[in-house]
Structures are given as C-alpha cells and as structure tokens.
Image: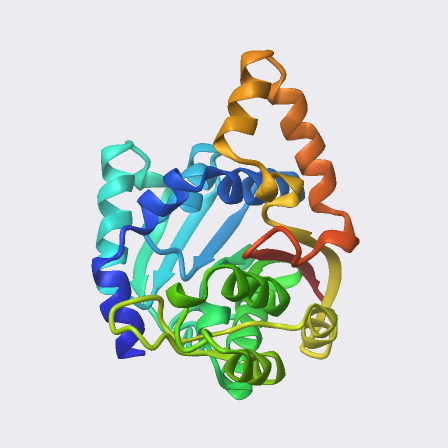
Length: 269
C-alpha cells in the first residue's frame, strides 16, 4: 500500500483524466444513466474526486474515500473551489479493503474506479468488493473499474521497453497466466492485477452482485488518433461520433481490444 500512496502522492490523476478524456466521458455517460434519481453516493478510491464533483453537481450527497491523503485533500479543495462542499458528507482516508466507520447499507450507489486493480492478492480483491457490498443498500448499484489482461498484453507487445519486465515473451506469457504486474522501473505505474475478461462476471456474482453491464471505457474510440478526432470535429459530427462510441462500449466482442479499462456495473442482491 505504501507504494500506491507514494505513486499517487506525486501523480496528477485529475490531469490524466483531462489528457485522456474518452475514458471519463464513457464512464460518466454510463454512470449517470444507471444512477438512482437521488440519494447518497460513495466514491470509494475517488482520487482527486473528478467523478465526485459531477455527482455533486447533480445534487447527490457524496462521500469520498481514498487511500492517499494528498488526493483526499485535493478533492476537498476542488469541492470548495467549485462551491460544492455542502453536497459532500465527508472526505475520508480509507483502505478499500476496510471501510470501518462507514455504516452498512447506507449508500444508494457506490463507485470503486481504482482500488480493485491495485490489489494483486485475490483475498484482498474479495475484501474490497465485500466491503463495497456491505456499505451499499440492497438493490443499490455499484460501478467498478477493471484492467483487462489481454489489453495489457497487446500494449506490452507494442511498447515493450515502456513496460518492463514485460519486454520479453517469457515474461509476457507468465503475465498471461497470473495477471500480476509490477513495473521494473522505480516510480512508474504501481503493481496491479489484470483480469481475464471471462472471469469478471463470475467474480462479482460469486460475491453477491447481479451483473447489469460490462463495458469498454473506450469503445471503438480507443483506436482513433487525434487526426481522426479532428476530422470528425471539423465536419461538425463529433456528437454523432460519440453516440456511436457509447453504443460500441457495450459490444462484448471488443472488450479488452480497444480499452485499458473496463467498467463493471452491478446490483447488490
């Protein structure tokens, strides 16, 4: 956990979502359309709170938790700066595996858009989703970010020197078996776990959730270059393009092929 705190204490996560807006746009589109009309929302592992701010703007009562104290402080500053602080119940430093202090069955919906893929041990992943389930009301909706293993394999084949030790076929084949990645270059992306796509739904369903959707957080947009975007924008058809991308995000045949993140949407049963 200390490596994660160190990494996110210096990494600009708010800026990442600004620099890579497609992931945020797709996630937010599906979060917004699957939320209850009102209520209390937990943003667990909220980072600097980019999704939380949008929830607060819609009038939800939001609680933020994150492992990294600096990011919790950034989220509080952002809420104050945007005049949204009254829409927040609390800003808490919490480990996703242990949300003690938060009452059971209190949130109408819960987000966990980061913690799960930082947990390399299966028992820790189970603890995190069980805690998410505990604090979410029966029938409440959860939104969880996942890293797909096959997408990581493709990335390492394309850019092997950027993702050491996955710069050799033996190491890549071992990663395919385990899904566990630890960057060889100090200070780069923290240790993480990448799911096989066929294991995602069974994992959540065995831990008390009904699957509603499993989405690509890029859709077909993950393959488009800046020049591609500029072309469609110049035609005034960017909105139509986004509708096509939102539609493609639900296509099960491209999961993992175009996105570094997936979004699981489930119901607490």
